[in-house]
Image (tube, rainbow, N blue to C red):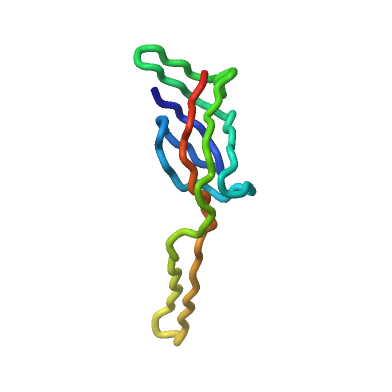
Length: 103
């Protein structure tokens, strides 16, 4: 059984027991989170597709860690102009473990 849901402007395909990093959620570690924006649920041979969301579809997850991702370096350079700019970015992420899928 798997489901496709959306959060933070991205879509994720998950099964029970999966661990994934998503955009930061304002929830403390150990708390449970419900995602109700489920786009599709597949249970072996039965597939439910939402228009746009599956009615009664829910993905339940537990927050395991709050943290930041890998640093992305941004370099802007103009040749022959004696100009160089170097910056970076680290995205805030929430690590969640999927505990249940219901349709």
